[in-house]
Image 1 (tube, rainbow, N blue to C red):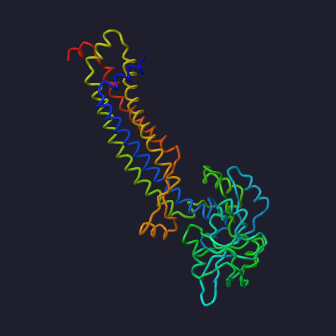
Image 2 (cartoon, one colour; image 1 turned 180 degrees about the horizontal axis):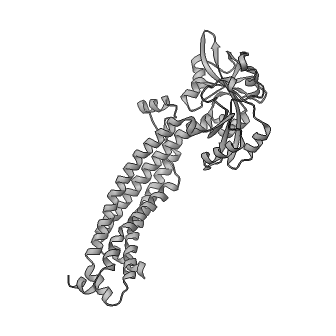
Image 3 (cartoon, rainbow, N blue to C red; image 1 turned 180 degrees about the vertical axis):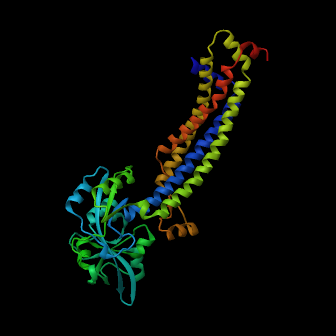
Amino acid sequence: MLIKIAWRNVWRNKRRSLITIAAIFIAVFLAIIMRSLQFGMYDNMIKNVVGSFSGYIQLHSKGYWDDKNIDNSFKIDPDTYNKIEDTDGVSDILKRIQTGALSSNNDLSKFVYITGVQLENENKLTDWSKRLIDGKLFEKNSNSIIVGKGVAKYYSLKVGDSLVFIGQGYHGMQAVGVYPVQGIIDMKNPNLNNLSVFMNLDVAQNFVSADDMLTSLVINKDEYFDENQLAKKIRSITDYESNDVMTWKEMTPELDQLIEADNAGGLLIIIILYMIVSFGIFGTVLMMTQERLYEFGVLISIGMKKSKLIISLIFETVLLTFAGTLSGIIISRPIVDYFHYNPVRLFGAAAAQLESAGFEPVIPFMNSFDIPLTHSLIIIFISLLTCIYPIIIISRLHPIKAMNR
């Protein structure tokens, strides 16, 4: 009965109710679109860094991250490896060895990073077959290499050409070799494309004379699992005095700081938007209360409890809010879904700026239901907060005084 009364009271003044619903709709719609755009951009940045190569967590020997030298490689204990693999939240483990070397082809030379990988495991982090633009992926025992498209462009390499590498191996050993190019890959990151050469793990270990040695153990997590919590578990398993366990935020703090700074700006705009909507909702509640004081006096004098009258007014506010919030979610959802599956592609200076920072120049919207749910709850909380005013007025209301106004 109270809900029915509240619904009828909402439409007693249709113009005012529609204006309030429209204000809430615009606020929810803009908040969802803006936050979906922001979080989609952040997610794409993280995937460019994490999904392309680094992974969410890495295990190194102590000091390797500050001095990426092949001499700072380590050998993983089988028992420790098995414990990490069995840890709750760990989805995949990737073994890698990486070293810098001077590459050469004809009259050209260039510094590159040679990374030894187990391709069957690497595909669990990044689907290499989708990023392969020429040639094919190497087999397990292949002596061939895969190069980033930037390296291939620099040397004008084709599948079947060879690259010569000269570098320093483990503990001063000489590292020299000639390897045929079997594939060209697009890592979706300009920095990786311009410097990356990939070999089979055992081939790379043999190249630097470091059998069974690794420079990093990349640990991928289950979706939505907290990487900080997982890193803490792995630290308890490993020898912390001789190993470092780092999350992507520690490995790329500049990206984390960029996201935090941009997110703070977005939150400020959302707060301003909600402040404006709060005054709009409060204005409606104020008018609904003040213009009906005589009516409230009559209802209380004929026996209606103040508590039921308060509940009826709360229902009116919630119904207005719910109508505006629901319409905002319904209208924004198709737009968010469309741009999630069809990302906005940047061109010109904006694209060049993102590419120079190592990010793919696209902005996909995030279509997580957390975003509309969060903003709906915020608006409903604001509307309930504004109900404090009519609760105070009605609780202090004297029927005779209200009817004599």
